[in-house]
Amino acid sequence: MHVGQRLRDRREALGISQGRLGRHLGLTFSQVQKYEKGSNRIGAGRLYQIAEHLGVPPGYFFEGLAADDQANRGNGTASAAGPDEVRQLTTAFGAIGESSTRASVLALVRSLADEDRDRARR
Image 1: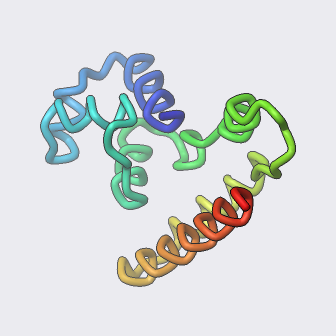
Image 2: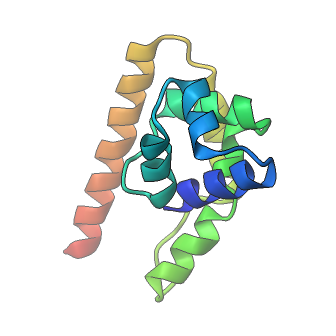
Image 3: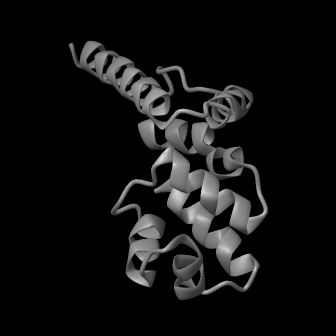
């Protein structure tokens, strides 16, 4: 939801409609709308395309995410990635040329995150 809100904020700041952004990306305006609402996740490659079109680095969409995450948790006990870590990860991920390698890295990160969530529930 955070990434979608940042997308919407930047798009509106530039005066770009959902339809125009969608046409540039080969999507419908409703798909852009779903990204902005957080109904659908934005893949790394698509986020990179969006960032280029909106004139920001991919890490822009993650700025402030750690603060939002901490506020949503309420207890502040879990460790969240800082903006510098997110920026470094985003930059490194964007530099991976092979889509199959990016998919593997993404699967690994999701697996590690799932393990941490499971461990926290115990």
